[in-house]
Image (tube, rainbow, N blue to C red; front, side, top):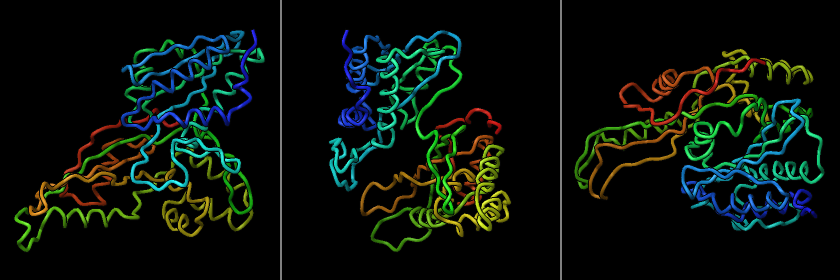
Length: 353
């Protein structure tokens, strides 16, 4: 059997993946998954396709190894965030190759990673690589909106497909970090978890023709102003402390001392501002974050609303409970606003360095 050569053309794989509009919501990943399944079948491998909804399918394929090591998982999600209201140099779902770059929504997050992982999986199949353990390739739906149709569905309903897996490779596990002329390659071992909050702002309502004071709109303005550019308290976890120390050890003085100073909560925020540049990447490793992303309120132009809701995209450091995160947000925006957790749960226990 003569096998195709997709494994030698990851850029072309990426172009094809981008051309499927998998904007989430609604996702509609099944067309892309069906195409990827056909490519994998052309290598004489039959993938497993499962999904909570016919339009939100997931793919899992396996290459058998010698059984002397645990299976290795190569995992990627195929949904992308919306493009509405954005300015694009090239159409977001064109997959154009221009000046050596593939353009499109998902080129980085994470269809570029999907293409690389898929090419590696197919290459192992094409070359008959002697694998010490099984190699599992998974493409999933719904990563950008809670994973109800993707990884959560797979874990809760098809965990057997990943039996024995001890290690996995996915998006942004390692990337170059340039500080003071030195290059580092940090490795991701844990992630902040999502904790979405809804803040309800109430105030005086009335007719739009009257002078209005004490309104929900006014209180909303003060809340958003308080949040703009503000940082929540510093959290120093063992993993991040080990990362900062390792990076500091590889830097020349006096930058090494400044970077190490990030581990002193009394100096953390000041040093982040002073150092700037790539060091800013440490900011979300040392803080929980809460960003207002959706505002809902008002029914007519001539009615002053008495209630407005604001959705906050919360990202929380492992080891911090949702209750403690909410307390941090409350301390920032005030005790008199109603805060409700609408999604999210703590991540796995903090990994040790």
